[in-house]
Image (cartoon, rainbow, N blue to C red):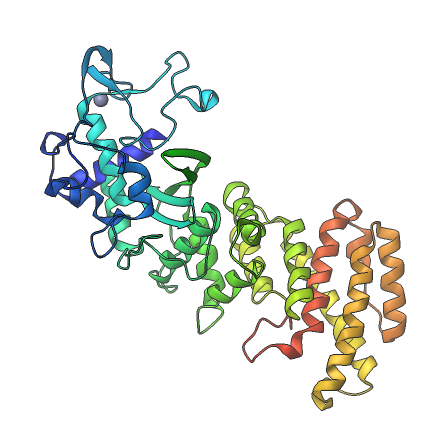
Length: 436
Ligand SMILES: [Zn+2]
């Protein structure tokens, strides 16, 4: 992890034609010398005042804060003689083996030591941080690539510009965010905005370091630190997703994945877990999807906007084996849902009034809840059968019988489809109707 962090420092030095010797490591933060201010500028507000990030890393530094090389210590990074024990403001995380013994790079060493040059490289890396915060919780992201040069290329060409910087963020997500994975999702979406779909799919080798930190007074508690590789796959998911629509549907998708209410972590947990599973395991968390689906049905009288096409884009780009079954089961659900609605209305949906549709939809939603409660395949198929009889419709239930082992997933697939039918009339034109 520290190598990727240092690469960001190297990228900054390279971009600005600086050598480590050009930068002072003895400073008082209230009046930082120009070069230090340059490094830290993205962590300051537009008006030059401190941000929460800046405060939590540098506020306690004083005129006496300095870096002192000791001849007896060896740099843990480059092996040069003459180093100092690494400090939190030089390298922002895991500086003490007691905290993360299993993550520590050199098993026998109790603390990381850095020579002056490596300390400057590490310090300079702060320049490239993207952060956002809620109260005392900071999420931040930094990128890495194959080389510092590649990283600069990536940052210049694709990374979002940190133009509006305020106390709680230096790059603002399109919706309130709390946790690092959901924050990264918004940054990746923004990156995908800069790529033309006509061009080849994005193939740069870029990864991200993402962090979640609680700040209590002068104490910072790392709740989360992770390296994510090969972001291009995820950027391509956003590209494929957005390509289906004239206007970027990301914000509506993103907003629909969280709960409403006064801002607290609880509102954002599902959305973060959804993106965490996606970014970390390249997989979809169907339990979370089900929770999000029924939250939207219950609290918002809708299905989560654009979730269905987003899931399809994920499965397409990551070449998930489930995609075909997903399409089959959700289409079955959609068809049965539409037929149930029609039967209930006794006429074409287009000819029904809003009240009639509302009533029919309510009934269908009850049936959807019944299906949701079925715990075994047999119970579920029984229930499905009843629904088919009342809709005077017949669907092919082989996808369920032939894949009993993944019944819990297939059930979610089906529930998404049938819910999309239940709410299809509610959507504005251009919405994500499941009409395949
Ligand atoms: Zn060194």
